[in-house]
Structure formats: structure tokens, C-alpha cells
Amino acid sequence: MKALILTGYTEFMYTDVPTPVPGPDEVLIRLKACSICGSDIHGCQGRGGRRLPPIIMGHEASGIVARIGINVKNFHEGDRVTFDSTEYCGCCDNCRNGMTNLCNRRKIVGVSCTDYKKDGAMAEYIAVKAHTLYRIPDSVTFEEACLIEPLAVGLHAVKLSGMTKGRSAVIIGDGTIGLMTLQAARAAGAEHIILVGMQDGRLAAASGLSRVTVINNSDGTALEQVMRLTNHKGADIIYDAAGLTKTMEDAFSFVKTGGTIVCIGNTSAVVNFPLQDCIVRQIRVLGSYSSAGEYSPGLELIQKGLVDLSPFTRQTYPLSQGEEAFRLLMDGKSGVLKVVLTI
Image (cartoon, rainbow, N blue to C red; front, side):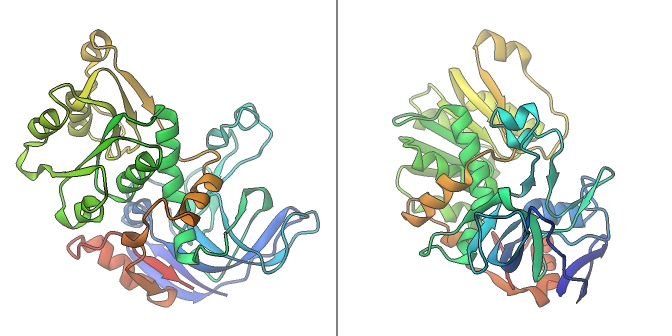
């Protein structure tokens, strides 16, 4: 099969590799679409230590079942499917308690680190555990379905936050995860959502949505604007999709007393934390990692047209031109929000 291999940091090769053979509990998928995640961009540049070359990257994907393992009963050849980016055991305490994202034995598709290597979906085929599969509704395209992974990340954060109808939110970060969290908050009934970012092109992806206000914080006036928009109370829930000391400071500035901050992004491994402010204002701070059970509700939202994925599917490249797509995104000057590789 053909695959796009990261052979060295920022070095790629589109070449032939052996087609994987599915195990007894696995399914072989003929891939049709795979979107490039921000973590793939960081990883291929040598940041984070989770894309050690050589590796086939890619964990946001969809395709058609080509072959099933001997123990697989619930899926058949020809089924249109996507899959959880986390391979989880289903047996540990966390899995049994519904926290498959925190599985003690978890492996992430398309990741190569010091603990394990698991080739990903920037290839013609991939073999994955059958229990991580989800059927794609007929009305949902492969390009839309491959975006269920980042949408599920946003849905997970919104679920953890306790968002309900009538509440207000601020999303910090105008990348894919920030924008997907915004979509999830809208679907959950947030009355008013403020998106704070730095790039007009990305902010434009949300500017036409109802109940949404966008703020370009390049001039540092976001706090003043957020306070004005929330009657100087602050927002009920803040979602930090960036994960920097500055955005943590902003989150505490934007949140109302007694409110909630959800940390999704982790650009910085360690940030300064305003402990006293957290305590005396009784701010609830939560970490949100990946997703756990949000693929099915996410696919239903896509099917019903309750989320708008069009800003993420506008730029496509064939897998054979994957290196060009990566260089476009690494350059950072094109204004392209997301690239979907078609296979």
C-alpha cells in the first residue's frame, strides 16, 4: 500500500509499505480521508516527543471496512466507518468507569514515542481494534466523518463543564479545537459564546454563527470587551484551548466568580497558576483530555446539521501531495484552518 511516512523531522516520503494484516479482534479499513491535526504539525517538527521518526502519522480518519478479523461480529466488509484515535483496553478501572481516554494501556493512533509506536492513517489502509469503530451515517461524507475526532474533543470538554442552556462561555484559542469546542457549546445551548483569538482568518470561521461574538485580541483589549459583553460579571464557563501562562491568566480574568475554567490545550507543559484567586473566588478548574464516548453523539450532530464543519473541509489534498499540505500548514501564513487528505 501507499503511505506518507515521516522519515525525519520535517522530512516526508510517499512510498510503498506492507499492508497491515488485521488481528482476530481487528478490522482493516480502506481509508478515504484523514485530516492533519495540529499535533501532527508540532510532532513532525520535533516538538513533544510523540512523533519519533519513522512513523505514519494521522489519527483523524474515515474509510470503508475492507476485511474483518475472525472474532469480529458487529462490522462487515463495505461498512462506512470512523474510529476512536485512542486504542483502549476496555478492562482497566478507568475503562470500566467510562473513562476510556484515561485507559492505563492506551495507545494513540499515529503516535511514536519512547513507550510505543502505532502507525496511523496517512496511508491507504489501517488495522484498528473493532471496539473502537463507529458507523458513519449515510448522509455524512468521509471528509466530515474524519473530523469527528476533534469535534469529540470539544464535546468532551463541554460535557465535563456542565454547560446548559442559557449559560455564557468564552473560548480562548481560534485553532481547530477551540472552534470545535465552540460548535459543541452552541449545540449544548450556550446563550452567548465569545471566541477570543489572534487570527482574523480563523475567527471568520465563527463570525457568522448565531449567539457568537468574536474578538481579535492582537491589541490586548479582550478583557475589556469580555467584561462589557457579560455586564462586567464575566462568563460562566471558560474553555482554554491554547494552554499557555497568558491564556491561563486570561481565563481567570474572563471567568465570573464561582465560574468554571476547562483546560483543553497544553501548549506549555507548566503554567503559572493564580491559586489565591482560584480559592477566594471559588473557581472550578478542570482538565479535559481527548474524548470518551462522544463519537456517536458527535456523528449525530453532524448528521442533523447542528454543527457546521464547512470551514474545516474547504482545503483538500490527495495523500500523494501530503508533504505539500504539511509545508503549507507549517508555514502558517496561508490562513488555511485545516487540511483534509483524500485517499
